[in-house]
Image (tube, rainbow, N blue to C red):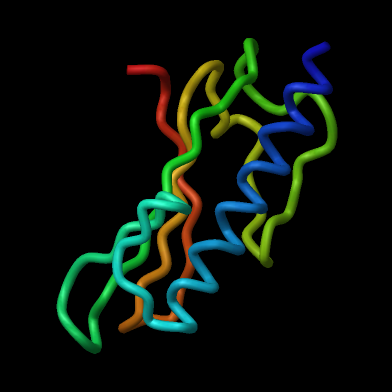
Length: 102
């Protein structure tokens, strides 16, 4: 079951990554349909989306995914935590950060 939750989390993070990239490419403002938010000023916008994880164990139990060229470290993922995908316009860098359940 945990491997299935891993796969669900990886798929949800990939989808959020695609939504953030699309919003940045089209320079969309905050979109309530996708949950992507934009902040900052022109030339230094950031687009962000948070994903609630469904895993019940810390760390990936299956293979560690590489999402959009961002390698996720096995130990970063926390049970019932969140993943936040952020694209920063000024640097052109996308990051995926994880936080434990709050």
